[in-house]
Image (tube, rainbow, N blue to C red; front, side, top):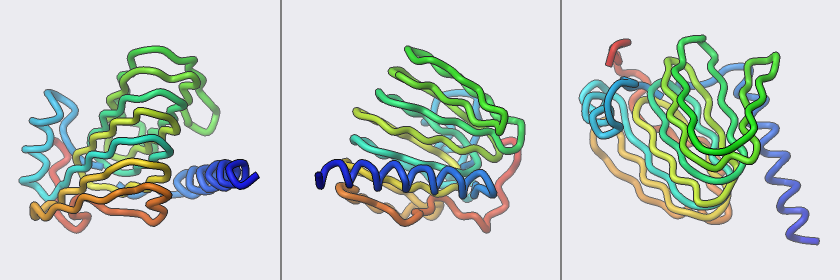
Length: 180
């Protein structure tokens, strides 16, 4: 019973977060050309940060930049500005909704999403999430997260049980070039 209640609360939290993000997302920023390492180097010099999270559970990331994610579960993507580049490989059934959300149910693979105002959510196992840019992340489940600020400050934390508040990476006040 306790496990069922925990799952229901997690799903309700996800629906709430997704609804709130639909109204107005924060921002992840970086170049979508080249490897993530190149993106991280270029972004870090311009006020952007980096994030790496791995584990099992739910990850919700909103921002401006680039997101690389692998895992098994359900993947949701939303391009709020209409300029995102979305590259998904692997398995899963794609469904596009009228409100702009793209869902990959039965997702097992890799996705690379970049844009000036994107939301990437995954609920699954063996999740490996990398992001470069300026944004926020919320995690729930079991795993580790490493956040590197624009100034190079690093925080590594365990998100087992929940990491429910928004965690920022990058410097939203920095003037980040549109063509990082």
